[in-house]
Length: 239
Image 1 (spheres, rainbow, N blue to C red):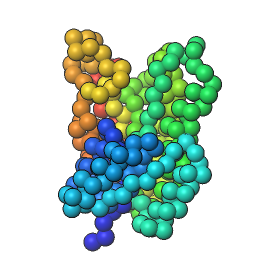
Image 2 (cartoon, rainbow, N blue to C red; image 1 turned 30 degrees about the vertical axis):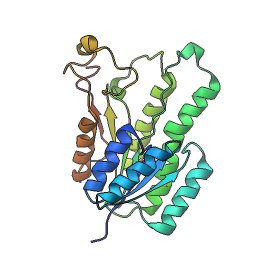
Image 3 (cartoon, rainbow, N blue to C red; image 1 turned 60 degrees about the vertical axis):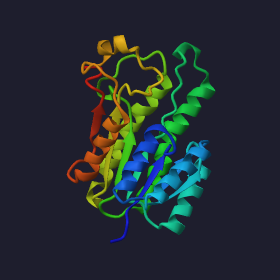
Image 4 (tube, rainbow, N blue to C red; image 1 turned 90 degrees about the vertical axis):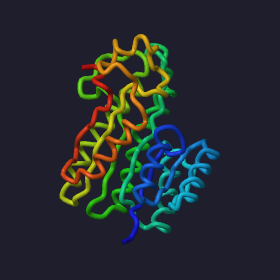
């Protein structure tokens, strides 16, 4: 049986690294996309290969359309298909909205939203029936409130949810699914509240783990009747 090919953006570190390990264990051939974490990417590739898997890494700034075009042309020549795309890039800028420089705004939306679209555009062209896209969002998108810090990030992820549902509707007849997984406060989040305050924000009283997120993604991989959904993995954050 021909192996399935998974492309993961932001795949070298943190959540992306965990996802790549999980996908390799499920038999996917990995194309790991990274921007700056070359050493981490090569270490991950070696670990996957040493474990009997197949993986390669490619450097790309997803906010630059020409670079994304080049990467997917390489994928077309080499793997000639994409079965799974995970858009995991999520550049976060904690700047207060009144201090937010327009260039920072542009950079965040270019990476988090436009970059995801560029990857979707090419991946969909290489997908057959049964293909799947999973976009990584953020908790609370279904009932978002004012966020004066990181506003550009929240705007980009809200836009990504709209894109997720539009693509799900547009490609359902091709039996291609498009979903979103939205983590809340994770153990490695840069804005994680102190341990004695976490239950003020998270009803389940703890930060999430990378495993919590990968379990949700594994569910979606197997849930062939699910498309256009946003799975909020947040312990009840913002209920």
